[in-house]
View 1 (cartoon, rainbow, N blue to C red):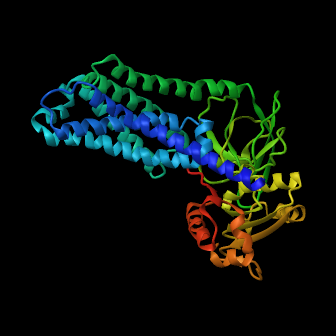
View 2 (view 1 turned 135 degrees about the vertical axis):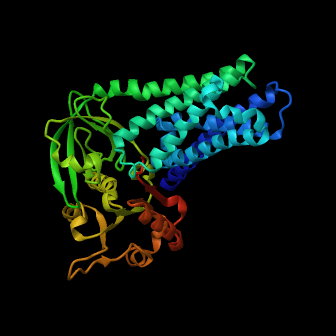
View 3 (view 1 turned 30 degrees about the horizontal axis):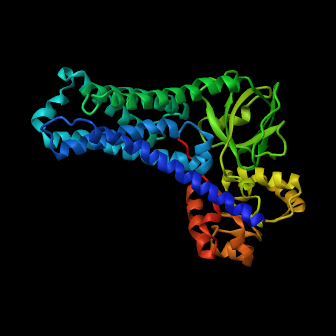
Length: 450
């Protein structure tokens, strides 16, 4: 019975994910219908028409980016928000490439007509809009790819990214409507305007309505505790409301400060047990910018939470026989939330934790892990890159030999949760199938949202 329920859950997730992919395809390719259903201007060859088609697809992709990153639970729940953001970055590169090809093909196909448009000072307004949109896109790409090298803080990058994205969409729509080809009919103009209105409504909800709702449910910092591994646990209590229900392993965007409108909003995983909604905790590592000062957070500081988010949780797979948790560094935080929750529930299934760190001092939660071994059927395996003298545990990398020494023959029946540095996650995800672990039993989450 449990296995049947589990399979239904997996099937439902695949079906919902397939639906969103199909809808995305329809909405990005759909604008091409304006070319085939409208009246094409005379005297235009294949390359010009191809240029227009690529421009329409690129613009539709940019428009969809606002919806993809709007933290819509139904979409995020199908893939995980880390996957959504990776897709966002990759599709951004593709859309910018298509839009760059758009004017390039025009210059090659009819240089006498289109090259003069490079003289922005005497070009028509529709051409000026096009160049402004293109400049904005290039700036977005450059500041996103080289944010750290350019010395941009997360907050400055986020403001710049948001403003430029809106400006690019506005200039691009101004260009399309100004050119007017394939948009003579009301339904054709209405399609693009409808997409623009949808973006405005979604952005208004995310940036205006949701903060107002969050402001009605403030939280208060009640404890800040130093942890091993240059990390701090910040505990919060709700002020004037019942708190927040979440699943172990999920995360929230957290804003510390008197105003919910502050730009310092960061995603942090819950490290506390999901069995308590009246108090939540986040364990945050000193890792640059804002997080370097997290230990100086004063008691009584007001905080606001946007969440919960994420699908990296054992609660989605209640019917599994047991689980193997593989953590690296601060990736231990969501896994700790799962272990604490399982202990509070008195879960009797078998669990294995393989936790990789550079040194013994970097092993966050190491004291509590010993206690959790008494509460759960839990095998804790610490793997150190640089172990101390007389270390009798695992050393080096989390490799095939480590798994073989600590997993049983029923390894294919367990669920695997992996969180940590990208290199470690890629290595483990490539390794597990060679041990007979089905790909559908591997869950992973990576935080690299900016």
